[in-house]
Image (cartoon, rainbow, N blue to C red; front, side):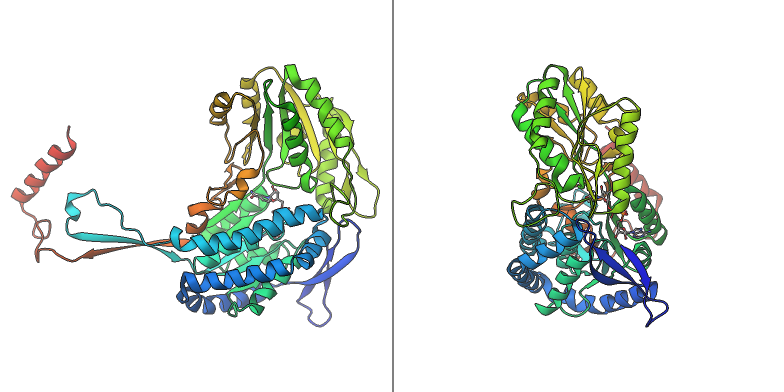
Length: 504
Ligand code: NAD
């Protein structure tokens, strides 16, 4: 990415979008100013009441129309995602196209159920004759700020429940990968979304900050540092936010595990999208009796993988490193590990250009003094640590401030289930990794520095709403016993009632 001043307007700048696998410039977008963002928010605010008024069925029809277009145009969409992100076509198809298309149907189908009015059972005898209804009311204008690693899944995917709840939405994609989102947002207008309902604010961090300053709620996915700043600003403005942040996911492999499966899952989820997934396997703890066999099998498997500029389906397994600063972090983590005594069994180097690539890298003799075991790498590393027992594995797994995902491999399911409850993480996968992300009925959230809020399930749509509790008194005395004037006799009666009801 680079920015340049646009001659036509001394204030506006543009951002060039680069293909990280080739170094070619493949597009240019506006770097929107704060005034432009304010204009988008005004349009979104004007459009919101009518969007809310068309109801779940009306909104669902439009989301389904967008899905039909999305699936029909999938080749072009995948081309854009692959070109701006550098990932393989397979990853773009499965983790972006499939996920977003599935999500469109999921929210179109389930929003009304999750947001239906509720009448909670009232426990208090003082509420006799009164009816209570809790309604979930859209917040207004939602800003969705997204990262570059899954350009559509983490922008359009999060916009869907906000839209289905009756909010209007402005998506701020990463400045590194804005093209696919722009394509989808334009198509929403073409399939019939009213003007102002779904808009895009292209630009860098300042554009995102302007959005935080103007909307009614922020859904953010990105680094923990940026998330902290955004949550602080939302706190000042007293608007809600949901922040989905970084991770350092551990995988624990116990001596009784199915080693073959554990190796396949480790290699897949450490290296898919070049390790640029918030819930990548970032560190492995393997029990001593199977450690040598496990490491040998990982190396064997990694040696068969093909890396390079993504071509047609089946052409490569691992693509590019999307952002230039990320490549420096990966290189620093490897250098730091080597300096502190780690051994590199495979890879370990960035590849010469064109494009940005880092070799799939297997590190052993690692420990928690090394950045690769405690800080998010977001790259194709497999640091593997030998552990004497399961308790030590759990202790080490919990020894980072992050808490997004975590895996345990064991044939003893009862033991694995017990150990799972000792992990500080939003998600734990037994004999698996990542997969609960596809269960859109269940929350996907981070603990600790991995975030606040979460997506999916009931809470994944209710976060885009206020609650509005409406009490109705239909049958009541004109003058209820608790009303003025106060009297000593009546209050003593209530005093005895309190003792009777709660004093035992
Ligand atoms: P980032 O924090 O650098 O940027 C994310 C977005 O925030 C971009 O659109 C950026 O322009 C915008 N931004 C930057 N500064 C801003 C500011 N001051 N105010 C408002 N917006 C601002 O993150 P990234 O490098 O794009 O993404 C990688 C990170 O995202 C990794 O840490 C990864 O773990 C995390 N991530 C988390 C999840 C999850 O679900 N928990 C999913 C994917 C990625």
